[in-house]
Structures are given as C-alpha cells and as structure tokens.
Length: 510
Ligand SMILES: Cc1cc2nc3c(=O)[nH]c(=O)nc-3n(C[C@H](O)[C@H](O)[C@H](O)COP(=O)(O)OP(=O)(O)OC[C@H]3O[C@@H](n4cnc5c(N)ncnc54)[C@H](O)[C@@H]3O)c2cc1C
Image (cartoon, rainbow, N blue to C red; front, side, top):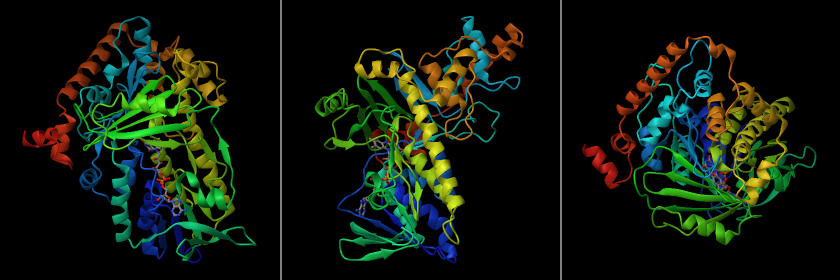
C-alpha cells in the first residue's frame, strides 16, 4: 500500500456497505484505511430484496455464517422467479437457478426435449427441473454434494430485507476497522491539475481526503456525476419503465421459495416473500399509466394489510458512460440502473466490487486498469439489458399500448442474433461475459412461447423408444427427489429462522 492508503466510500446503502465489507476483508490487514460516509437525513433507497445465487459466494468470501445472515436479514431461500402473464395473459413459468434434465451424449438436454416435443410426445420442460418442481411445491433443501444426483445440481439465492443486510454488513465492517462518519456531503474539491477528487466537504464543516473515492451515493451520483460530470447513456428506448411504487405487507399463505413477477398493462408487479413480511412493488412506464392508477393496482392486489405507506421511486434506465472516472469508482445505483425484473442490481454491485479488487490500484490509478474496468462493467450491463428486454419482446400480448410498443421494437443486434439462432434450431449463442447462462435463456424463450422450428440434428441420434425411456426416467427421478425435500417453512424453522411466525414455529416443532 505505498500510494493508495486511504479510501472513502460515499454512501451506506447496500452498495456502500458491500463495498466497504469486501475491501476491508481484502485490504485492511495490508494497512488500507477505509472511511464510509452516509447521511441519516437522506437515508437509503430501501428496496432491493431479491438476489441471484452469486451473492452466496460474496458472503462466503467474507466468512459470513449463512445461518446468522438468514436470521439477521429475515431471509428466505429463492430457487428462481415465477413469471406470470408475460407471453400471454394466463401463462406462467419459472426461470430456475439450475439446468434442465442432464446433458445426454454431450448435448444440452433441451435439444432432446425439443425433438420429442415436435412429435407431441413429451410433458413440459419444467418437469425435468428439480428447482422448478421444488419451487412450485414450496419445498427447499440445500443442494447435495454429488453433482451427478438430481436434487444436487441447482443454485439458490436469498430474498432478504436489504436494510437489515446493510446493518449486518456495517457491524462486520466496523469489526474490520472501517470508520463510519455520519453527515451530508455538500461540496467536493477537485484537483486543478489532475481533475481528481481531492476531498469531500460535509455540512458540519468536516472535510475528508482520500486517494480513491467509491461513489455509492445512489441515483444522485454525487461524485461520479455531480462533481465529475461523467455522463449517462440513457437506455429508456429499450427499457422504458421509469417509475415504481413499493410497499411491504403482512404475509399470507405458504412462504414460497421464489419471487413472482406479474406482467401488467403498463409494467409489472413484484412479490418477494420474506420471513417477517412480503415485499411488493409495481414497476411501470409513466407514459401509459398515472401514478395513482399504478398505486391503486398495487394496493388492490396485496395479499395482506399494508405495513407502510406506498413509496414512490423515479429512475432512468441506463449506465454511467464511465463507471470509473479519474479517482472515482461508481458502484451501485450511482453507476447505472436496470429494472429489477431479474434481481440483477445487487449482482452488478458484486461484479463492480470483484472487478475493483482484481484491478485494485496498489501504486497508482493505471489508465489501462480503468479501461479494463469500464469495458467489463459495460459488457455486464449490456448483457443484463438484453436479457431483461427479451422478457418484453418475447410476447404475444397486444392488449395495451406498452405491449404494442414492444412488439414493433427494433432489437439491439446482440439480442436479434440470439433470438434468430434460437428460433431455427434451439441454439443459445454463448456470450463471452454475462451473468445469465444458456438455461436462463431457454427458460424465458420457451416460457414465453418462442418454440424453435427445429433442433440440433445430433439430438436425432438416439433410438426413439430409448430416448423416451430416458426422459421418463429423469422426470420420475426429479419428482422423487422433490418428494424427499422438506417444505421451505419447515427447513427454515430448523435452519435460519428469525421470526416467530406460526408457520415457522410449527415447522420447528415437527
Ligand atoms: C424499484 C426498485 C426495486 C429494486 N429491487 C431490487 C431487487 O429486488 N434486487 C436487487 O438486486 N436490486 C434491486 N433494486 C436495486 C437496489 O435497490 C440497489 O441496487 C441497492 O439498494 C443499492 O443501492 P445503493 O446503495 O446504490 O443506493 P442507496 O440505497 O440509495 O444508498 C445511497 C447512500 O448514499 C448516501 N448519500 C446520498 N447522498 C449523500 C450525501 N449528499 N451525503 C452523504 N451521503 C449521501 C445515502 O444516505 C445512502 O446511504 C431495486 C431498485 C429499485 C429502484
């Protein structure tokens, strides 16, 4: 640590505390000094409850005990996302965290399924997915050790209270020597020669200097935008939803291990079950629905009494032109925003942190590292954008202005190529980077009725009756594995329950 000896993280939301936790875990022992500044007066955005499986590896790298984390954040397990009414009104499917079936003859399982499906000889692809069937039945257990077993080869994520996660990480960070300063930043001083941020100034009059600043100040982008005027690529023409209204409510019914995203006339609605409550929100395009109507639609579909007033949020989809500019790295909402349809924001925070650690400027900020960082994060954002857009364009709906807009939209080239390859032979072109692997694309494309006209010719090799027998066997083994799996409530009651909900207490006693 010869030159970069002090880091200032501006912001104490999920992004700020995750960044401070990871940097302190890696570099505190090497003498790196970390100070996090947050304003109680401004607060955090207070949404962001559903995650992707990668967050488990983030927590593991920090040495966080999963049971303590689940208790502290009122977390539930997540096996995927259920999408309702996206292809057509009345449709639903689950995008699972895991593959379908098992690869046969070195080829993706779905190719054999396509062959039999084209002959009308097979049940839905979902019946060959352990995480889908387990999710549908409200069941959960940890994946087993033997990856060849059905019931082992899947991933899981969490649904948690993000404000409790930030609190949990704050305790972790303070244990690692991170200094927390409360106060509102009112001014920034730039170096007249380099243009770097030299110091930030607080309302109290205090000043904080650092070698590197991490801007986690949320949509405000206090350093990356207000101070450095980096610029923003607006992606609203692809993902035009620009507002959301969010409200928690009392939980009702079984605690299911999945998030639900239901398409609406001018957007979509989320439902995220936690241990102590259910999170709900309506993401919408203000061009086609008023705030009052969007709020009314949300409130009239809550499963239980609301636990707070609905909270309105405004956003513009897109990304900062440079995620890292001068001596400022933007992580979290300050770096860009893509709507939460596939729970990707916290994952993009994690990607930003991982890339920063890998390219960490030990001696000085190297322009090559900065370029590499910006390229990597740019690709990550683009890949997620394409995947989100797929949900809107792979639709047969034309019952509202919004759906008609998407049906006539010109796609980004990257997505156009991908859907064409899929429609001819069920190929999923692999991206070099990007969080979503082929099974995720298969889930959404088939789930939204994009049925390929052909299949890979190699899937024709196995004898017909043998193939039918193998698929039947995989299906019955999948069903059997799910039958052996406990209900999530029972599993949680023994594993990481925080609340005293009757369901969990009953589970613990049984
Ligand atoms: C509608 C919606 C739903 C979402 N759902 C999900 C989801 O399900 N899953 C997911 O992964 N992500 C989701 N997200 C994204 C997720 O909420 C964010 O990525 C995450 O909360 C990180 O936010 P942040 O820390 O960047 O910003 P914030 O939470 O806004 O934190 C900003 C911090 O900066 C501080 N600050 C700001 N200005 C100043 C100042 N002048 N001086 C001092 N401090 C300042 C604030 O006090 C705060 O501590 C959702 C986002 C939206 C809008």
